[in-house]
Image (cartoon, one colour):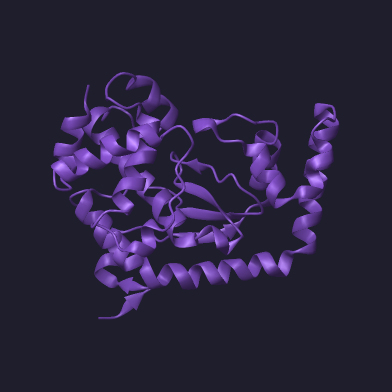
Length: 255
């Protein structure tokens, strides 16, 4: 059977085509927005992550906000200009790696979520020059670091699974919402589960991608946010108890 971008025509009609691209403006926004953050979601230190990737920025920590932001923006502008060829090359590498596993990922995700239709969206992974790598569930985009040492495939699998996870939650609990507006869903579903929704989404992905439902290369050395370890055993135990049945799983995690 003829294949399109790594998977068969029949699968191509059902599953989104993930694209890889550069977005300098998004990178500027992300670094400027996250640089002051030393205690973000799950206890992560965004500033530390940025400085590990770009130690030349360490002298900006104590600058006034406007000057700091201008310097950050100029640094990123210069970095993109100086590394243009390298960054473009990362797009080709990512395409090659993803095409080797995308058919397997989609068929396994399809099985976990019982054929749930993937929501409409852009489905773009924007290469970023530094972590953190935020996701945008509403338009189905996310960032992925240019450094392949961060294990590209597990990160892609993790972020893509988020889109299906939140679509399942929307259809099951908030069908009145026209889109997977993550902040709105977190707000409306406070207290609905034994684990808060954002934390549940992160731990669920870690557990499922490291279960028998997915091959090892998609779980990888999964990076769990600090402070979420206590939830891992709960989710892992329930997922095993329901033998990977997503409907039974959510019944079990409801408060």
